[in-house]
Length: 115
Image 1 (cartoon, rainbow, N blue to C red):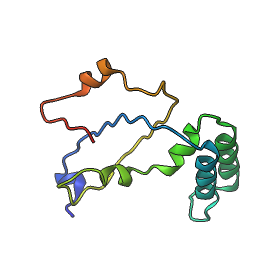
Image 2: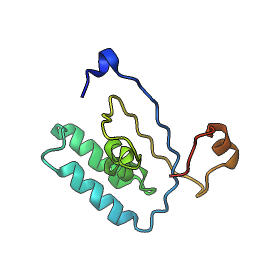
Image 3: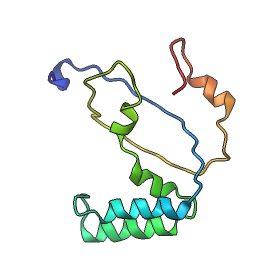
């Protein structure tokens, strides 16, 4: 792969996705397993803080953040073989269950496709 700092081109990928959580307890359990994993790069204080955050969030949003990685999202993109997430911010928040159509159209371009 080429040196991205000299020759790379950067594209910002924005995805709005609404998911229905059928079992918040199972979602939280999966997130807690990730947090407790020794390979998670957390010190003891950070680990405890995240455990408390996931456990106290009744919506499941905090848990879901632990289970999504930028590489997972990039796996949805066809025809791209060499992509490395250089910078990623992930936000998960409660939703009314539908995407706002007006907001949806604001982001659409001529080559937009539904994933």
